Amino acid sequence: FFLVSGLLHMALDGEAPAEETPQGVGGDAAQPAKSEDSGDSGAPFGLPVKGGEDLGGGRDEEIEEVLNCVYNVFLAFSNSDSTMFSTLVDNNCRFVRTSWKENGDPDVQDFDKAYFVATLNKTKKGVVQEDIGEPFVQVRDGLMAHVWTRYQLTINGEVRYQGVKSIQLRRITNQHSEPTTFPWRLVNVIDTVDQ
Image (tube, rainbow, N blue to C red; front, side, top):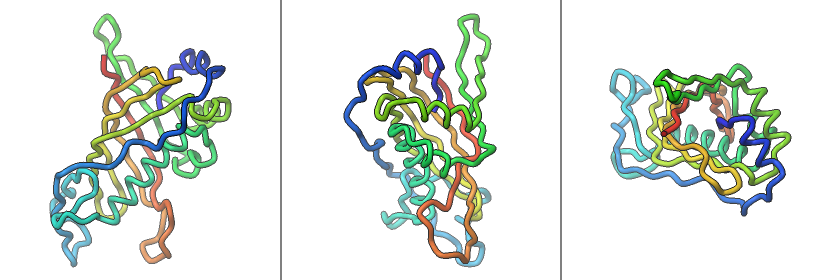
């Protein structure tokens, strides 16, 4: 998500690489069985899950919904699809990029949703590719979710940033409503830039 304006502007006139789907879901950590009466994992804040697998090796539907939202945000970004991006990101979502300055001070940059919508509207499809891997997911009470994941951002096929993202989401659908493709929205994203 996080682009330095000058780097992106340099890439806007470049050729788009072949379209790729964001990197897949994986992991071997287990999630405890959900308690029937509490509606949560049984742990105080829900236990983290890698890749959405439950104890029996099956898939957890709620985790899959969260990951579906996250993967589609990255797909929208790679496809320069500002409409899909806007659908999946809360209007008040905050994006923060953290790294270190040469003098050792923290370097923190803050972006809003409008910045990325404008960026996607002027970026050719496929110029920017951001892939994620090893997602680590927590869901609490079916209302909020947290995803830790590694990421790599490329512009015209050249790696520009990589590190770790922390992504927070909120549920937007009523628990009694019909299933929807994207019941979650991103509300906060912070990432590190590996040096």
